Image 1: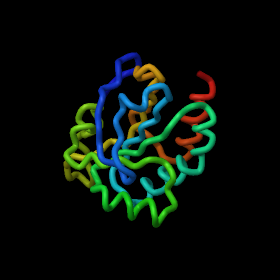
Image 2: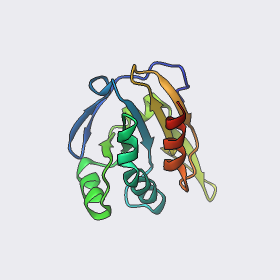
Image 3: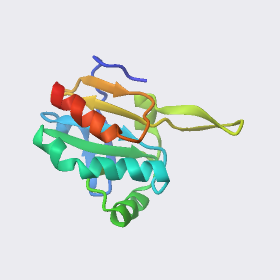
Length: 152
């Protein structure tokens, strides 16, 4: 997993509204939260929590991008059904997940499988990772990220 102080890797992925290129968004802080799958309870709550705080993030010159391996079409439906306002990126081939180190082996009821580890990264206006949360607990996380950014 990427660590604080490292340059953020550039990437371009399709979003539910066009595409997202990291390099073109520099000049703002960028909050990227990786989530396992749209329409699951934890992922839905996390995306809604970040959406509710969108104006607060914007007021401190930050944008929020949620990334999963879901197809763009599924993310569009996810946005519409749950009134999500933050950007949603489709990393269907998993390249961005691999680059950030969130594509990991997981275990459920003794069964091992590969999946996205829920994690959040904050990238500075200059493109350097300044905050990381490697194993996110959903409850209160969006607010915690916002408060940490307000301190910096």
